Length: 249
Image 1 (cartoon, one colour):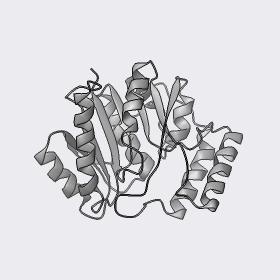
Image 2: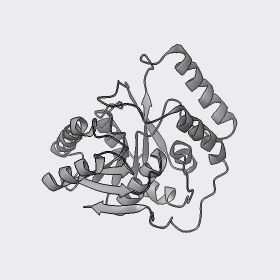
Image 3: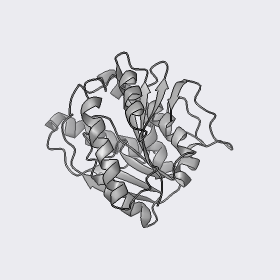
């Protein structure tokens, strides 16, 4: 059985994390019980320079249960950098990773499908929203337009896929060759030259707290998508992230 690291970026999640951490822990136990992953699997919580008590919560979770590990970034580096830091840390520790946001808007039960498709031979499995019932007409229209424009510019995005995805060590080794300071992971994923499967799921409302994606951050992410098409891999893996202030393993 393979060792799974569930990589969870966290930014000011003091309201959300106490409610979702037990859900992550139970899911990890269920996957072990089902024989899909090894008992050495972990939940890696990445604190992206939070200004609240997020890191104290992560430290407490780790102290109570070794299934929780933690990374603390300083200063705030942004969602994509937090995910990348977690993935690169897990690359030397795990056989396979699944990245998912702390708010559990993504269906955690889709992990079963992801792991089964990985067992079929897919090094990357992307979670794809099956519908946008909770979105306004304007949000649905802008989302569809965004993906069309991105693909037109060569970003090659998977429609309705964000950052809920499985990547095994082969995929992570390929991703490590991209040294971008401000990565656009959903664009880089399709540039690795590896087979990709998808797993559909229904997205729900946040368990607690508010979305950290402001309009400014969304515009920045969109701009990053355009430049991603010109990203080139290096000959050697990216160096360790100098912004990691603390590790809990």
